[in-house]
Length: 102
View 1 (cartoon, rainbow, N blue to C red):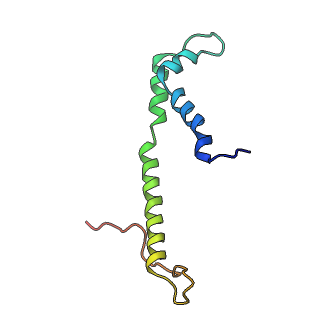
View 2: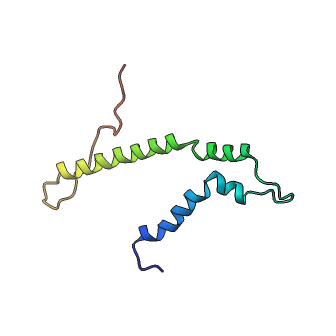
View 3: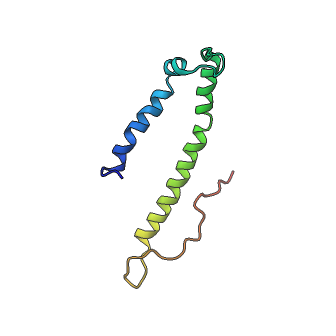
């Protein structure tokens, strides 16, 4: 196993991930498996469009995680049990995301 912080271990992987998405690099290594013909510009463009297709949904998912995290930590810090064991109280009855009224 590694004996370093996990962030350090991930650096080469992250750098290679970004490097591999560079159009010049894709054009350099992208070849047809039978003919050896270089990858077309349209295919490179389609790859980039596909890579970013669901980025807004992924951002929305992170916002939802943050809302849950804030709710849980706010409950833990403001609603301690009476026993003094520093545990959060058992219930929060309101929904995490409030419904908008128009």
